[in-house]
Length: 129
Image (cartoon, rainbow, N blue to C red):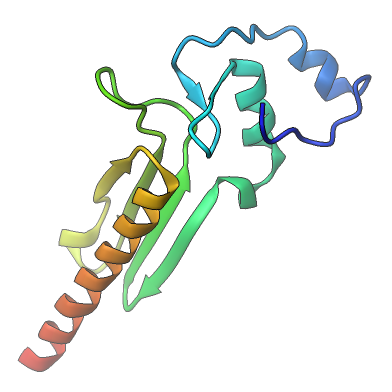
């Protein structure tokens, strides 16, 4: 695993994790797209919110959040391990939109594209008032 947490080998967490299988079966990946096992994925998920976080913006009433999932969401093709979701209580079109990506670079570019689209629509709405 490329991103190893700083857990003590004899800690209760490590003892519990040692019981998990860690075979690589094409399901779990680190942020760099390297295949990892379940045990290593749990370590990364448990590490911190900062590791999972890619980008987040609030534009008007729309929150755009992009995160690393680490779980391959694609059956065929390259692993899809990042996602961007939008949330809005007031603008239905932006509530719970979901887009997934294979790489962190794609996820960042997709996040920025969605932010730009939300800004344009927000400007159009304000100009129509």
